[in-house]
Amino acid sequence: MDIRSSGEPELTRAAPEDVAAVEGAAAAEGAAAAEDAAAGERAFDAIIAADSRVEPTDWMPEGYRKTLVRQISQHAHSEIIGMQPEGNWITRAPSLKRKAILMAKVQDEAGHGLYLYSAAQTLGVDRETMFDQLITGSAKYSSIFNYLTPTWADMGSIGWLVDGAAICNQVPLCRASYGPYARAMVRICKEESFHQRQGFEILLTLSNGSAAQKAMAQESVNRWYAPALMMFGPPDGDSPNSRQSMAWNIKRFSNDDLRQRFVDMIVPQAEILGLTLPDPAIAWNEERGHYDFGELDWAEFHEVLAGRGQANAVRVARRRAAHEGGAWVREAARAYADKQAAASVNDTEFEAAETRHVAERIAS
Image (cartoon, rainbow, N blue to C red; front, side, top):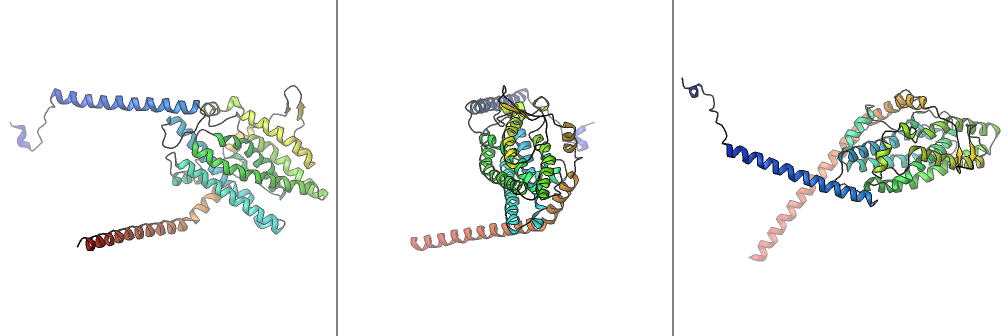
């Protein structure tokens, strides 16, 4: 029986020389890709060794890219979520001046988030993906923003302690090895410096006010001191990402080094405020040249990080509601952009036709 009569296509075996040619081309392509990767890695290592900047068009290890996407997107999420604790007090600020300053600060935080999302996008992750990770709860942000702000003094503590810790952590990031991140941090740190001074001034005013105002300031500092120290992350021995980030010059100092710098900074500032830091172990260590301080409750840190803090669910729910409520604005902006792009194409076509018409008249 002739199997070709069944209508099935006839199978033919490739000639040995054809198979060898295909395999040879694939091998050559693989070798070229490997050489390109090796050359890219050498160039990357040279940039890191020279303490220079990696730019988006440069070759980079996948681990480096993933580390940056994680760190920068989490930083951006923290700025956006961080608007909520202070935004809660805009309508209740004690004076018009305080309200205007607080509004400006919250607007700054929104801008910081946008700078950072833009920096993350240069690594190949789109903004919608990052937004989705935040509002679905799959992305992390700084655990400090999962604490409540029941008193006006908390606006001072957030500025002095939280933004102060942010400055200690973020100023070295102005020298991070990834160019877009480092450049974004320059402006962010300038504005955070203002935020820290604003918080210090609120607490100074309260501590020099009535006994009730000073007590409110002290109670707030008592609540925010330990969470602010935890902002630098777990102890170095329990921080799996720090060592590699420092090897890549993304981070410049370890978590414990940054925490020590922060304590050394705020102890004399607390004396100026006339407030007491809630840590009886704080004492100057002449031999080390630093202040000693007590152990932190890392169980609390991990509970908040796991989503069981005072306000985790509230923060994400409000961000999700705001994102969904603003859908019509994004749709209108896209429609307008599409309309402008179409108009630009039409204008270009019209100008091209006019140019051809003029050229034809001249030629004739």
